[in-house]
Image 1 (spheres, rainbow, N blue to C red):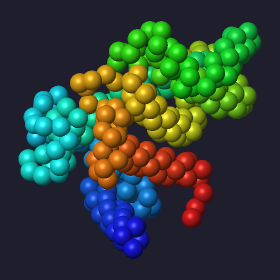
Image 2: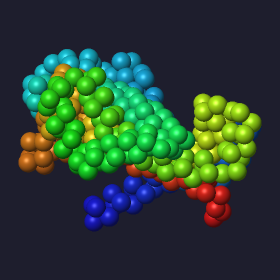
Image 3: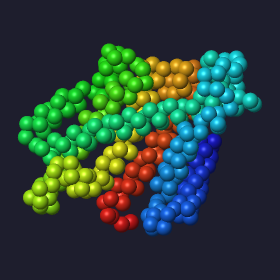
Image 4: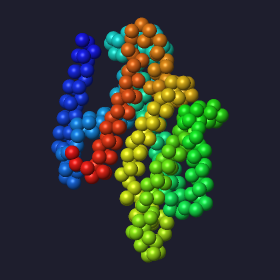
Length: 304
């Protein structure tokens, strides 16, 4: 019965947040975006509201958090009560504060990593499709060799060799994920470079960068934007997994993956505190996927 009640309450909250978010988007969106938000599904409006909430918390974390990020305040594993509304962790740090700062660290690092992977992968993929020949073959075989190694194992190997600083973490995961972006960008670009308007642009004497900027990118933007959202989810989960394994973001920096590991012992005593950072990870992943699905549906031109 409690599980059924929780499901009903969760669904009610989902629909309420979706309706309210859609109404706000329609009311405050610029005039040229109002038709877009008028038809937005509840799942996408819910996802957008969650993403905006996470961004707000990440930006204003120092003003929202009640205590310092690494400040030791009391005894270990204090229960939920004022002034520690979500209790304390194994070192006596406030869990609510760690959750808030975790949004800044985990989401911020994941976004920077995804942006780097997306830039490198899409640039090399479009370049290979446009130039072709030996460059395309060499890059593609190199990417195939990297993709033959499971991503988590390759990340663990590289982090063990080069260390686990934040910069190294970003570069390693970006390098691993850029291979996936490369394959998609190359595939999409190969379907575009054979079109008649690309040949006409070449006959006009347009250079490679103008072709990419004016002809290829506008026509490849929809699948690439969708890939960016999906890749962000994978990178976000990869960072959390590596932190859970002890090779991600290092203490005392707050990170949701390491918070699950550090407080996992509380589950034995029926305390759900370790599930809070795990829930924050899951919620953002679902929200991003909702928005990506909406964008893919819009790009497809299909109607309900």
